[in-house]
Length: 260
Image (tube, rainbow, N blue to C red):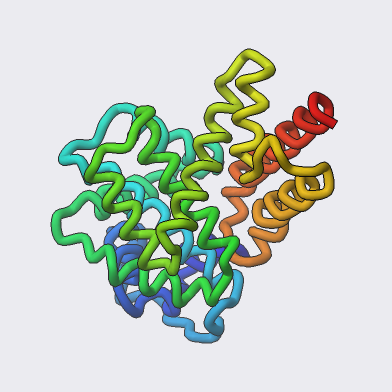
C-alpha cells in the first residue's frame, strides 16, 4: 500500500502526533465520513520508514509553500502558479490536490507553527540529507517564482535552512546552484548557458575535468529520483527530481563539449 493508500485507508495514526499530524488532519477535513475519530491509529511504522516519511514530506512541503508565499504579506499569482506547477508535475488526483491546497492555506495562517513543523520534519526525515535538500529546493523555487526574493522571503528561507541544519554558507551555495539551474534553462547563448551550467554544478571555469566529473556525480547522486523515493520522497514527486537530473546532465555535457 502506498503512503496515500495508508492515508485514505485510515492507517495514518503515526502522523497524528505533533504539528504535522494536526496539519494533515485539518487538511483532510471531512474526507472521512465517520470523521477523524473513525481512523484506525497505526503506530507500526518506525521512525524513518519510507511510508511514514512520505506523508511527512508531502504535508511539510505544501504547508511551508503557503508559509513562504505569504511571507511578504501577500500571495502573488506567480507563487500560486508555481505551487500549481508542482501539483501538475506530481500528477495529483483531485482529492490529493484538494489536500495539498488545504495544506497550502494552513501554512498561510498567522499562527502557523513553522519552527515546530520543521523540527518534526527534520526528526522524521531521520538524517536523510538529500531528502531535506530536495525539500529546500522546492520551497526556494516557489519563493523565487516571481524572479526575485522579497526581504521577508529571504529572511524566512534562511531561518528555514537554519532550522534544518544548514549554515549560511551552505544556504548561499544552494541558492547559487538553483539560480544556475533557472538561468541554464532560460539562457539562449552558449556562453551564458556555460556560466549557468557551472553554477548549476556548484563548480567554476577553472576546474579540471576530473573535478568537474566529481561535482557532476555529486549532484546526480543527490538528485537521483529512485534514491530520493527510497528515502521517503513521495512517488508523485519523481518527475521533479527527474527534471533536475536532466538539467544536471545537460549542464555537464555542455561544459565537457565546449571546454574539454
